[in-house]
Length: 347
Ligand SMILES: NC(=O)c1ccc[n+]([C@@H]2O[C@H](COP(=O)([O-])OP(=O)(O)OC[C@H]3O[C@@H](n4cnc5c(N)ncnc54)[C@H](O)[C@@H]3O)[C@@H](O)[C@H]2O)c1
Image (cartoon, rainbow, N blue to C red; front, side, top):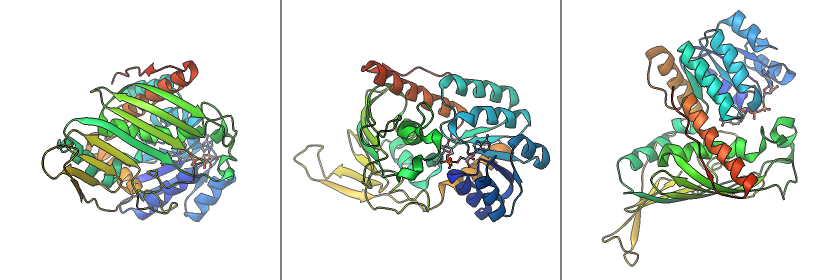
């Protein structure tokens, strides 16, 4: 399968590497108006285009990965669909639910695949956790306690989009992945209450947040996220997603049910030794999942969807629903009150 990469920045380079290293895939060019994209294309032995439309026309790829700044995702995805090219759109799918709905409508009209780059859903560890939850091991899910702490260097914020409200910030860059992960394991989020702070970095976007989520079945989650906190308790710094980050052998997420609990990414399953009673000791066993790049698994899944009609694991509808949760986060912060999450209907 010949895949084009549109946007040759940090994650674009990860996608190019996954394409080059995964059997059965070829790189069909890199589109990026700036020289960083040209350098990535040269390093990867592929053609460089300054405009994605020129690439689509010249290379006619079998698919495209859109790894550009958030505000360009939907317009570029619409161009790809118009050219008959299925896409993986990086997260967040767009900036607003309305934008995501425009793409959903275009996709329905085109019949082409649109995947969203919530690559964690392809990660073997998260798939194993989903199996554990779906098997009923936890009983009824009661509560979740989780965090995404990381220390990004100051120069990470050099590109303007990363510090532009409504486009960058740790909510749209990091929390959106967490929303997707929570929805994947725990079901739909119906309401939430959120706090945001920019006290540490002093940028126009938040650097830290604390959010309480309510799920449709009444379970609750408490989540802290920060891009300026020197701790390893985040999926990125524990799960081995990307070779850019050291792997720390600690948990970042705890899912607790009436009968057992499971942690991520160590997949510790905790149960009572006898009666479910706080005076009875609990023991832990670890479930196992293979180590494999979620980015490689993501493109293999994309091919299965495009070529074999496999059901999409994380499509545009999930991207739109994640943004509906994000919309409630902004409303809660603005009003200082709990906010309900709007329903996004499938097409
Ligand atoms: N799935 C993940 O793990 C993950 C990780 C990081 C970033 N992301 C997402 O990927 C996207 C890119 O993030 P990044 O950190 O790589 O950003 P980046 O700033 O490092 O790279 C963006 C690239 O897009 C290029 N670009 C800008 N406008 C373009 C256009 N119209 N056409 C083609 N290229 C264009 C820029 O020149 C730059 O090279 C963001 O949406 C981000 O949220 C996802």
